[in-house]
Image 1 (cartoon, rainbow, N blue to C red):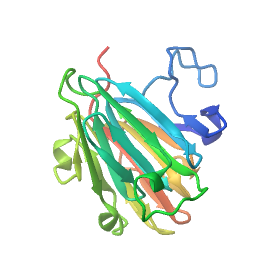
Image 2: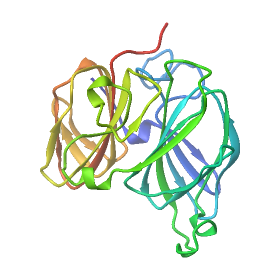
Image 3: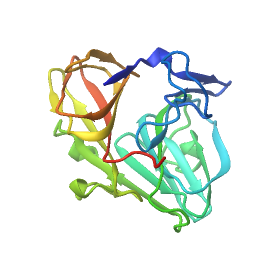
Length: 252
């Protein structure tokens, strides 16, 4: 078990964006942890927590051969791609984009320009975006979105986006049969147990929790587990956790 604190993440600051990255975008030595590279954990290669100011965002850009999962914590994000999809993503809605052979898309905090029922505002959007390598390259691009709010009211760890056989009830599929994302919204003192896995990434998206064997984790903190599991996660206040479960890592 390896604990990564929120303040230890790389930070990018622009006029309209604050982005906190759990993994380095380049192969490099990480002197903070003595690792030759901090580029991934298991199959998870990107885990960014972004705060995007109103009216701004990521203009049209291209992705290839990557599974991209977006989870909104507050505010809203507008997704537009060259495959004809335009959608507004809000808290409780999971989004998965299979980049495959190539897809152009934009992500912006300007939902009022696309939905007249949404008033113009100055509120930032708080978003977590995660990338997982696919099983196969060159597949057709695709896009899917699902509202999982009712399921999260149970306080249990709910599979949201997954290709794992054990997660057949997940709201969205994933072009990787060895990885899956689950989410839990916990009331104070509520608890869930982490499954055993070859690789697991636990991220505290909101609130604070106690992780059995590690202690307190606050918002933005993460735990990386390898060949481990069964640890109990207990909310110290209302909390939300994102858990990637992976049964294999990247091929060497």
